[in-house]
Image (cartoon, rainbow over the protein chains, first blue to last red):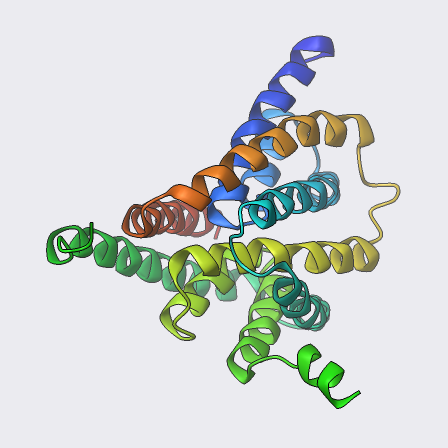
Length: 133
Length: 126
C-alpha cells in the first residue's frame, strides 16, 4: 500500500481500534502492532513506537467521552494509572533479564482461561438474571 | 493536608493491580487493559463497565511513561501515526458511547471473546 490508499486504510483501521479501545478500555496496541508489522510492513520497533503514540490520544478521547457521560471516575483512573506506569517501567527492566517467549506462552494460557470465564459468566447471566428490567 | 493525602491514596487492591498489571504489561509487551480489566472485575469486584472505564483512564499515564521510557523519537513514523490517530479518536468516542449504554453481560461476552482472540494471537506468536 502506498500514498492515499495507505492513509485511508490507516484511518479506517484506526476507527476499529478506537471503537475497541473506547468500548473495552484497552489501549489498542494488541491490534495496532500486528497490523503495522504484517499489513504495512513496519519493523517491530517502529510498530511499537508508533502504536504508543496512537494509544495516548485515543485513551484521552475515550476517557473524556466517558467523563461527559458520567461513566467511571477519571481522577481515580489517572492515579491508578500512575501506579501502573511505575509497574510497567519495572516490568520493562525485568524483561531484559527473563526468557520472554516462555512467559508469553504461560500468559497466553492465563488470558485465554480468563476470557472463557468472563464469556461464560456473561452467557450464564443472560438466563439466570431475567428479573432485571 | 491530611484530607488531600487521603484523596490521593488508593485502595490496596487497586495499588496491587496497578503495580502487578503494569509490571506484566511492561514485561510481556502487551497492553495493560488486558490484564487490569479481568483483575478489577474478578478480584477487586468492580462492575464490568467501571472496570473498563478505569482501565481506559489508567492507560493515559501508562502510555506517557511508555513514550518516555522507550524514547519513541527516531523509531516512530509520524504520518502513519497521524493517520491511525485520526480514525482512532473518532472510534474511541463511538466506543465510549457504547460502553456507557451496553448491557453488562453483553460487555462481558464481547470482552471475553476479545481475550480469547488475544490469547490465540499470543500463543501463535510464541
